[in-house]
Image (tube, rainbow, N blue to C red; front, side, top):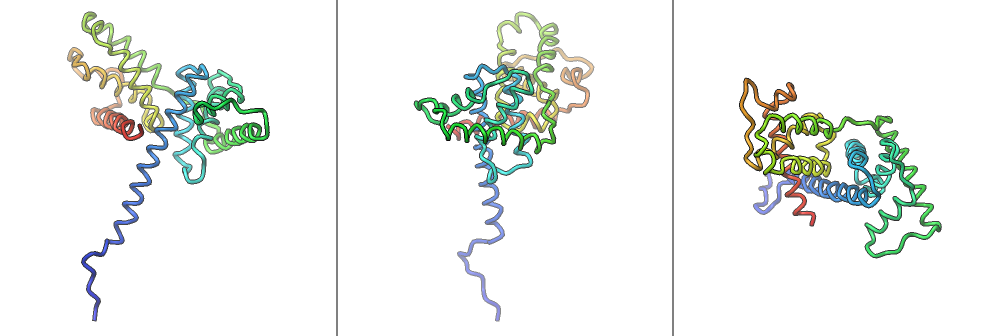
Length: 249
């Protein structure tokens, strides 16, 4: 005689799915916080925008094939900052990176003394840098959306009414959106031209600025292989970041 299922039993096949989704969301929050850490410490270290973007891209590319359960994300971030400085020829002293990151993670604390703890952390950063290089097969140069966005902005400025351009902060908004996009893996998941066009598209629509119609859409003039679906997908992912920001504060 077959046993009847208990009415209050939880379907066992749903547990792994729910646990996996919960873990995925927790990982997204961690990556968001760590990338904010990279950006804020980068500012304090005097890094330019491209080296900061490189550090975030290195971090995201590393964790595309590595697990947060295996590697300490803040150590990876510190090594990414160190490596990004080398890649973009804005060399940073490991001591400065350690002190700034330590003060960020331990508010109000004094700089680390040059003791065993300091040297162990320094060695860990250097070893993790080598790990990142091996994990990425030494492919640490990236194409960035910054140059494309600059080109698109200059082209649109010449095309739009100069009064409409002057009274709306299209440039500032587009650059801010691009910077925020580095909180997520968008920078390594989409072509740089697509990311640049998506943030510009969102900036224009945020202020209700319309581009004069032509035979094709304005964004297709800049990039032939992008579709409206591509733009909407990137914008959707970007807007989710602001919901993530609310959850992480």
